[in-house]
Image (cartoon, rainbow, N blue to C red; front, side, top):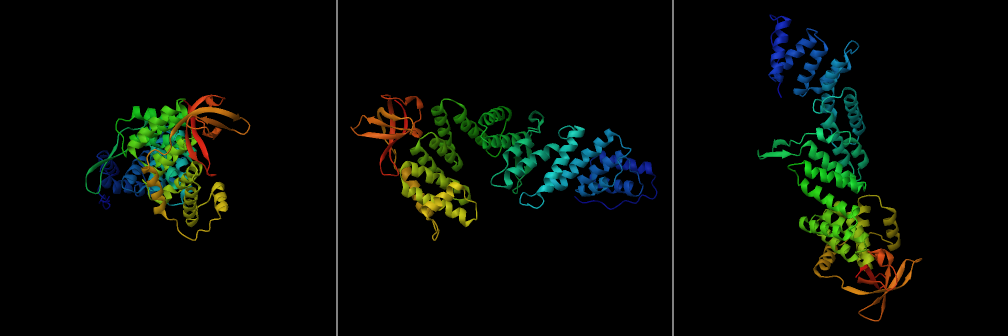
Length: 447
């Protein structure tokens, strides 16, 4: 915004000058008001708190917030009332926001501590003066800090995000979207502060595995937000259904509902989460299937490097050690080449396989493996039998199969319904070939 040159005021008395400043201020002609207030402050030496408040607002409207910060630093607040300090500090919070918070780039690692320090300064102003929510920069600061923490590292401190967001009262946040024009001059909208609050908070609670709290936030968001942006309605509903798989006793029903949602929306990260859910419930064939579908939806290596590791574990548990080795190699190779830290588990696999990384992984082969598995139809038959020879201490048993006279081994970890763990209980199960090239029963549950 351009600022006009200082007007000729030699023949005007102070009262007329102040009146002119007030008229421009009330009319929101801040570019015209700026040189007048500058003259009042610097030349006429009218430096009362009321003038400082108005001058400060004019400065920030002209993108000169840094000047106000310099003035404030040297201003004597000794005889200023608490009410007057409240007005001045309201402008101070906005100028701090303009200068340090709003323009902060998450890639700027060197100034991050200063950024957080100023954010706490704005928070302290709010704690002292209790400004209305949108009179100061308090709300915008909490949201910007939360967004910054979420995006500045691959492993954000989600508890810190929660701390900043829960300083806010959601009922006081604006639910009005922010209109803007895109590069094609088309009218667009940004998510409201309330929508942003729900999005970040629900994600953070999910990441710290507080599924009950995450579910509660998602429920409230769905009721509270009339119109979602950036497909937030998908992310919120996905989190809600995902949390159901942990908080509801009917796991089979929750898994089915989540699976239907994932198949409909077909996102890599959703299939990956579904794969892990199936794996944790002993549904090994389904975990391989969902992991394979996830891999076909994303080719950006940094986004799928963890998926490659999980697919290796899925394949190993499924009994295919050859595929497991290929996926372990790819995961560890991409991490080593990017100088990313290896977990203790991946370091162990690296040593066990004696990987040397002389060759780049054949990523097309991994895609082909996934495609073939997805296209091969039903991966295992549903069989039936009854449980015999349970070994409680070693956590395994055998199933007398209805289909043949041979008994089949199962591990307790592959039993979905623990209530079936007694002799002669009728069950159904799926059969795989394990890493020893022997048959094993998985997904064992009541008939």
